[in-house]
Length: 170
Image 1 (cartoon, one colour):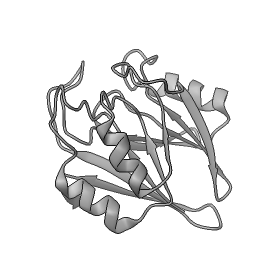
Image 2: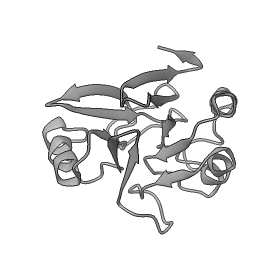
Image 3: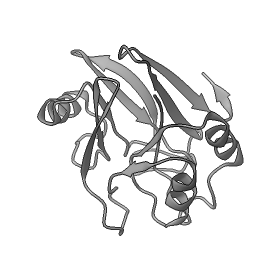
Image 4: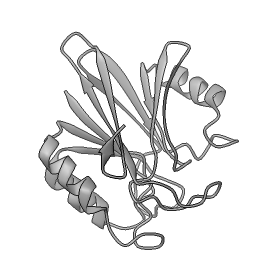
C-alpha cells in the first residue's frame, strides 16, 4: 500500500498553490491513500488530493472546515494515526506525541503543525511529520523547504519511508 503524507498548505494566506513538482509526483506515484495533517485553509488542496486517491484529513489550527481532530486507519496490518499536533506543546514534543500514539493504539503516528519534515522511531512507534507542502512559515518557524512523505507498506507490514524535499527524494 502506498500512502502520501502531506499537510500544512496554508493556501492562500501563506502560499498561492501546491507546488507543481509535488502535484506531478503524487499523480505519477498513484497512491492508494492520502493522509493530510491539516492546515489546508482553503478547499483547493483537498479538491486536488481527492482527485488522486481517497483522502483522510484532520483539522489543523487554521482550518475552518468540519474535519475530525484524529483519524485512525489500518494498512497491511499496521495501525496509523493522524493528528495535526496543535495540542502538543512545545510543538513536535516526542513524549507528548508518544502519549497520543499510545492513546490511539497506533504503530505509526502522522502529525504536522511544526512545518518541519521529521521521521523518527521512538519506543517502537514510527513518527512521521511530512512538513509543509508549500514551505510556508509556521508559528515557530520561518518559511522552509517544500516537503512531503510517501509511506510504502508491504503485505508483511514492512514500512519503507520516502522523504521528498524541494523536488528531490532525500
